[in-house]
Length: 110
Length: 119
Image 1 (cartoon, chains in turn blue, brown):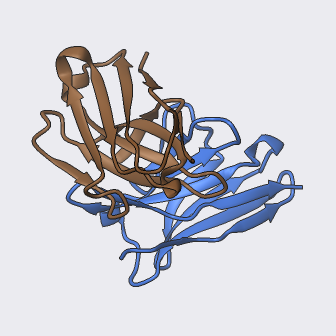
Image 2 (cartoon, one colour):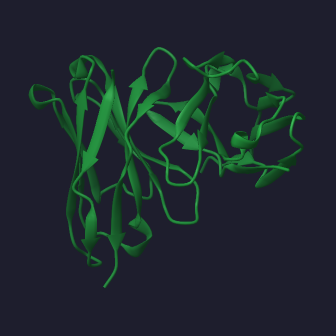
């Protein structure tokens, strides 16, 4: 069973920079997994932020960026704002029409 | 603009059945793969199932295989999830999402339908 790992929680100061990561319990994350990132605030539908590792979805500000960092996918938020306080999920595509979500990271901005 | 609207959620007893629907508009539905994703209360998002544009291919998470069935009606621009033998752990907000097959990600999401499995 594939397990995608994310930090359960993270904290950042307003204006600060934070990098959230997305790994595999067994193995390394590469661009071949087409990592994507989603933001979800309570009571709202998920919002697509990043796809194909580092492509921003339409309307997403450029302070959100994606990359491969070592053996993990990464989402970096530069100049964090109060309304960035949300849950963030990465998803890896495993092929054959199967996706696996990470457990999500609860980001606090304070 | 792309719109996905889920319906059919509700309260059902363990072992019961429910059928979710997702009405799509604002794009050529028959050109796109579609997926169902859920979020149980207090937990994270979980991919549930996907279906190809012509219904030729489907796939499911192990946790729902054999109990949930995805289908679509391209003439009605609608996606469905037939849920049988429901368990308490199927309690979740269920989202339909459009799949961008070029980059294998979910580009548009519905607002969700709540399914509660409880006696």
